[in-house]
Length: 314
Length: 314
Image (cartoon, rainbow over all chains, first blue to last red; front, top):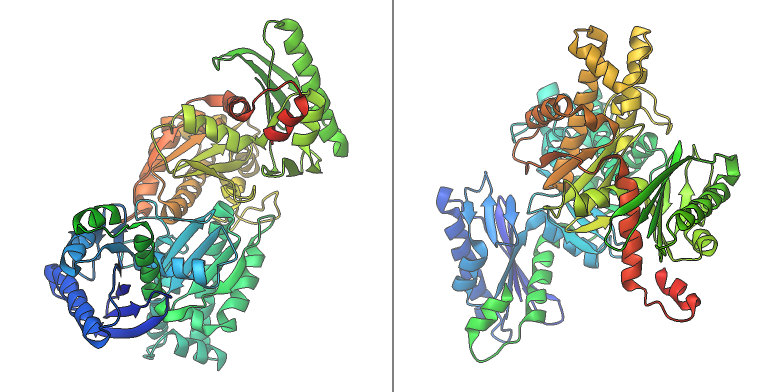
């Protein structure tokens, strides 16, 4: 299989053999080209597949997995909208299938990463799970009784839950979780408060630990917002486990211990979820894409005529 | 079928014929007896079944549906906890099956009412739905892709989502939706603010309309809290429809119009749910219980020996 994870800055591609092992991982800058970004992404995947074929002629990829950010309609195979990447109603699945010449599974990056954690990583022992990625943004993947729930591609947008009176969010809302507690927001809010530029949320945490009161205030408010949002998720869905990944999760105990404590301070009779750090890490998206590609092979019966294969691959 | 909906004040019982028509509906005060309330409820269902049999000897109920409030574990058939009714880990399904002598389906009152709305009422045209009952308390039933999701009996407890800094909630939490916006809370908070006793939330609404500023404040804060909570539900689950029932829904447009407007004021890119008033009304619980009882008959093959029937009825 071959798997592609299209991000805001780069495209990650993995060549995966029949046993599920990653044979090679490549990374290229995402070809941002305004409204033509969709076409440029497809062209990039074709070039990456060619590179894999040249470097590993012994491996013949039979299916591809492609995941992208934004609003994704998995049922139709369409990238509905990714504001910062430029496409709108772009039929990724069909165009990638044509261009790559193999069946393509198309899905959402956070949901694919969530599936990797759900099937192979931190959440594999549970059936009702929410996997949350906290990085530049905040989004989640919801597993209900063993099945990913996409809500027409709109479920799991917990980054855009209102948890405070402010600040303004890129989505046009106010007080969204993502505007308070994403890794990017923590760095941005600290700089706005202190006037001190920082490399990222990790530096804000370090400054908070060193006694910087502005950093402590920003870090605390992010933890409060995350705990409040998790408490809403628990009240509504009562998941057995909540897995947190993305850049912020790398803070480890500095995130998980105070978060669990604050969540416990809000909950009363509700079922307590196990709070877990994501295990698969930054390749979860591309591994999730490969899992989807493999599923495609499981249902495809490769006959002499490639056309019905593509049909069934939907 | 015969169906029982056990509430905090009364037990509703319905005799339903093969066509699904309610032949007779009886209502008795709930036999509150501390820790023995579970046993007393079972005895009441037996007496009600006897009454139905005497009044309608031509109908032979072949299965029963029993629904109760509180924390219900449907898989085990156990009423885990109902603080104001007194039972704890009470094996309703097995004891009712023994005492009634017919297969019994046991479930949660709000989820059963939700199923009635989902299958026969306001939500029947949708697959991803949240049905919310707002009365003395607030709780919801979640349908994901056509299936009720119970979360081990703990999902849908949206009444205990924190939406404000106060007031204290009966669950021990603070700022729970139920403590701000349930019909009971609206009446209680108005009286606390104004010193004026009222019959219920309807009277608070009438006073708000007549220009009473205290009533307006309480009503507005309840609408704000409900809209905020719905916005969280939308961000997380992106349901196609949200159905609201229970006493407060009887306010009609006075509830639904400002609620929709406030929700719209919070949401940005999210999928907009259709907001619908429950259609089935106060008998939704007992109708949901009857639906569950009918399901039991669908899977039961009544043979000469009753024992295996009971076994399979689980």
